[in-house]
Image 1 (cartoon, rainbow, N blue to C red):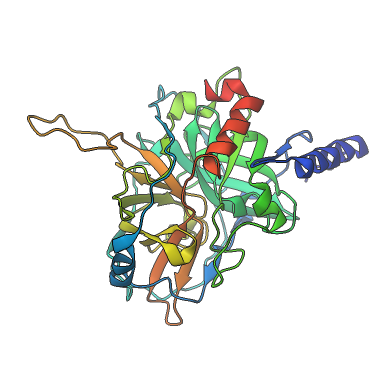
Image 2: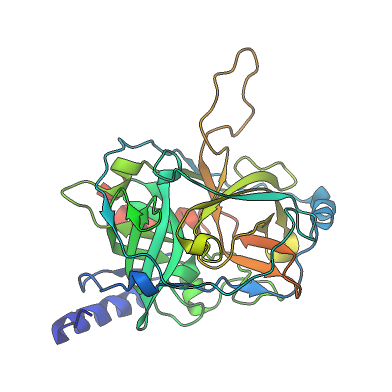
Length: 373
């Protein structure tokens, strides 16, 4: 354990106070206290927020979407591949044992088809642009998932960096891209800044009546990483692009989503999982996107992508609109599991420009321009 000096503690407190004084759409906290000792071996998943009220079956979501209009201000920023330079280290494997869970059919009882698979080569592009996020909340070490969206910026869920309505941030954030069974092929990266919507910290975010503090508009956060010898994690791994306002969605709120994450109930959270599912925007869930998924706690904050993978070379068959590859349009925010644990659905706050992700990225890039160049 690292013991902070009184001066360090005062500096950290001042940074927290400054963060809470922020106005607008991005509250922030700067790392002024150095590194925090993380207990990798006993890291637990940050509990995935859940609701007990059904968001609806696939058919119900499709019917409700017939008159849905998700038009809004679009913001699109492309990703990049990175040079693949490795800096491998090994971290202690987790000893945490996930509680037994009842398995589901691959479409669950919500009839929302999905596949969840173990990704054997997370070191390969574009998987390496996602990773595992470690952090401290009190004395305990927790894990979430995250992904690069700039050369030095990762996106995750707000509930992975703060507690809804408690006006405080967690601490000791550390990002491990392409984590696999303790192997960290691209090293581990400490945080420099963390940004989250003030309305999430204060508990004033717009949330559904069925899931107050859970199913909300802005369960999104970004973290600026500290560079190493002027290099950021994304210089090696590359980074995903991101899009707002329904990028690559149909006009009635449908999209094919690829979800990446590290759910602790699958392979003990030691391997990256990939889920593919049709996503539907649900107006009864404050516009969140809903997918079918087998992923659970630990997957929080993992990217939801459209157009995942690398594009083929077309011969006489042009691509459609919003065809850029590997674009993040949300992050894992919450889950719905019915009493028999056979109905598996997850939700993500809808990416908006100035209302959430756009404001967070703007603030991060203004604070640390080098992380975004």
